[in-house]
Image (cartoon, rainbow, N blue to C red; front, side, top):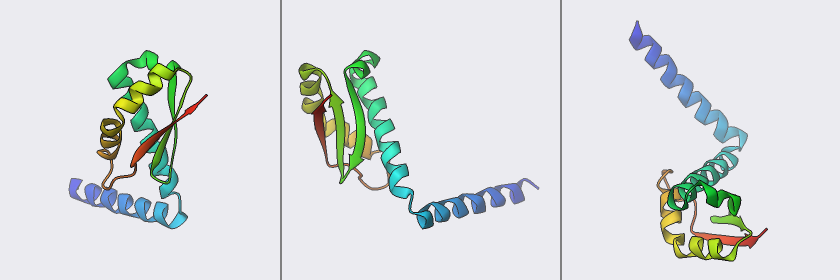
Length: 105
């Protein structure tokens, strides 16, 4: 009985992933996951107070964009750029980000 339930869930997972790919929304899902993951990583590295000063905005063309209102926080993100990109990419099967861009808010 439980085996049939597992098989049904596996098939449902396969159907959902195929539907997402067909609908063309995979890029949007990947972008949203990468932005959420980068927010978690920045919070982990610098503490939750930093999110008042710097915020991940988007992922476009393998470039992760942050908005920042403080130059010292931007410098901190710049120093840890490689590590942040690596941690973001660790959450995916293939790398989704190559570098970080910081824009003033």
